[in-house]
Structure formats: structure tokens, C-alpha cells
Length: 236
Image (tube, rainbow, N blue to C red; front, side):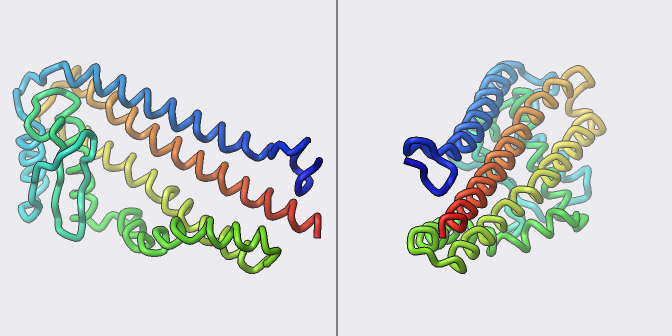
């Protein structure tokens, strides 16, 4: 039995898009974990912890109103522009590895972006509410519209999901720029030597790949929604 013009004997071929996205995300996550595990075992020559490196970078950038705090978890590090806080996980805050210093510097890169009013960061912050709304409501609206044959709801679901994809699209250059700023500050302040910076770059590049994979998976998901909606319309 064909379903909505895209399935074969009951199989929804759009699931292939989901599988591709899942495989991309799994591969990126595995790459990050292996790279982080490698460089967390290599101590930086400076002996600075992630927290100490972050403090030095912020001061070198002329930023004195950003707090640095420890938080639980692994790779849960982030910068909160609302509270001006760099939060470093237990793998980063008190550790002296190249991985710890690199990740701490990356979060400081976001703090520097905030201080200089980096446009993509401000754009990302502005669309957070609508992106969250899109993530939570897109699928319920889409499914109700698809199953009940209510096209406006289906369209609304696609539009809302598109907002979530837009957020990820804007996030990618923000993350890449933060890593670029981090590496520049690490070498410029002498926290890492040129050879050590290569190790930190590999960690940050692996982290960036997770954002690339997430964006690709979301675009594939959006494509799937469009195919499903198109198939339903062709059957009406």
C-alpha cells in the first residue's frame, strides 16, 4: 500500500532522511568524545586551569564584569549573556589539559562577542524565544494538521520548525567565531604555545562539527516535513 505518495508497502521512505541526520549526529558526537578524551590527557605547559585561563583571557580582552563559575556535568560549558557568566564543567574548570584550556577559551570567546556586540550573537539571542516556541509547538501542530487534513496547521508547524532551523543556522557562525577568537587569545596571551594551540584547535573543530551535524539533521527534518505535507496535499 502506498502512503501519501512517498511510501512503498507501508514504509515511509522519508525515514531515510532521519537516519542520515542521526548518523551524522552520532559521527560528530563520537569525533568530539574521542578528540576530547585524547587532549584531556595532555597537560598545558603553562599549568593554568580552565578557570585560570578564562580569567586571563577576559582580563586581556578588557572584560572585568564577567563571572566564572564551576558547574556539574561533562561538556556542559556555556556563556550566559543575561548574567554575564562563563560556566565551566568539572572537566574544564579545575583541569590543566589542552582540552580544558581550549574549551574555557571558547566560552570566553562568547563573552568577547557579547562585549563587542557581535551581530550574529545578538541575532541569536533575539530569536531564542521564537526558536523555543518553534521547537515545542512545531511537531504537535504539524501532526494535528496532517492527520486532520487542516492545511493551515500543517503550514504553521513547518513555519515554526523553520524558526528552530534558523536558530541553528545563526548559531553556527557564532560558534565558529568564538573558537577563532579563543585560539587567537590563547596564542596571543601566551597561555598556549603554537604547537599546543594546534591541539586546542582540534578539540574546538570537533566541537564545531557537532553544530554542523545538528544543522544538517534539522534541515533534513525540515525537508521531511515538506515532503510529508506535499504528499498529503497530492492525496487530497
